[in-house]
Image (cartoon, rainbow, N blue to C red):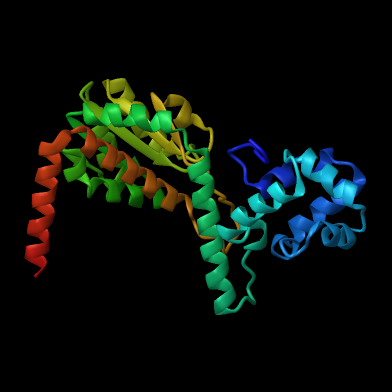
Length: 286
């Protein structure tokens, strides 16, 4: 396919990853685009070459070096990337940003991160997780901090999962629930780092008790290695003071996908019951 790059990376990520492999003249084009991709979109090939101080053939070689068959296909893909919001490198928040800047940057950062999670999500893992959850007699959701909030949200979707669900907020309660689980239980352990000690210990206790363990993580870690099945939510998460914790939003979306998938697997009878429940809730709310 013309202009096809690594499907897990945006064109800007690809440029950044391959920058050091480029010739010096091609790096000039890369640096110009990475510094201000929105401005770069306004250039035709001659304008981009002039702004970067290189020749038009160099711009063509640059496009080829990052996986495109021409300048036009590169610009189309760049436009699609920018349409999702400013790249994370340009959405860094500064203490003197205006409210307008802050709003734009947080939306752009969040949209870009969720798009990254979507592009990197292994749907085969989702299918396997839905299979496990659909056959469970009980589901336990565990997490700490922001991941604990995701676990609480998941527990609220128990009508979609169709079986008893619990999400104990206290570590000791989580450990007790995990220790009391068995082969009919599925434990969903949530940790963006994959290294949260309390969550790992609960997942370990659940596995020792015979429970199937599904992890939702953002990176490799002890939890993902322990789990029977790991679902990876890859986001742009860092330790900057002002960066929003978008990992929890990606995890919430994954929980929605799992809950909806299980509800669909349970068939029309289960879906009818959910529909009736929602109608009664609407009536109760007036």
